[in-house]
Length: 260
Image (tube, rainbow, N blue to C red; front, side, top):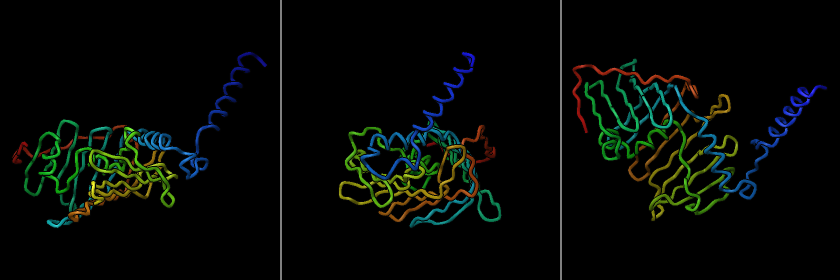
């Protein structure tokens, strides 16, 4: 065998060995000793990092004491900070458009022909969206990804709850808990509790779809138990890592504009 062929054969063998050593879903058991907190966080974050963009559509339902309703939507998202959602009501009626980036938000109400725009700070977002969600949490809700603790020193408990991992960590004055599915390695449930144990926010993700080793949920629900607010998102179509998501949209010239 020539030297060149020997090198090729050796490289093939090494590639197979390294591939066989990579963790597979079936090899990582639901055990906090086999999978410690640091390894769990890394696996989940690595999976989240593989998702770069999304293009899809489906339906969204809002429920609150003041209003309730549903609409269909089309979405384009590019991580880490760009989101465009177009909403349609019954019979294809154009309801409005929401655009978010790290520097700007824009909400267009086509029924009132009014645009509200500004910098995506929490106070400004609450003035136009009837849910107490930050800019980052809105992106999380539509992607179905919820950020795990950046600092493992904040982890308070790490255990197994039923058929999922459960990791809890302090997040400011509150406690954030993450239920992690060991099949797809994603956060299937996310919860924020205050110092008195009251649930301030609860998010659920399910119905996973997988495309080219990238996965995302088709169903996402975000609830605020304290005041009965809830948003539910369902994707009937979803393309992961779409190469060129479009963020083009148009607003009528005669639309009333409010800057906040």
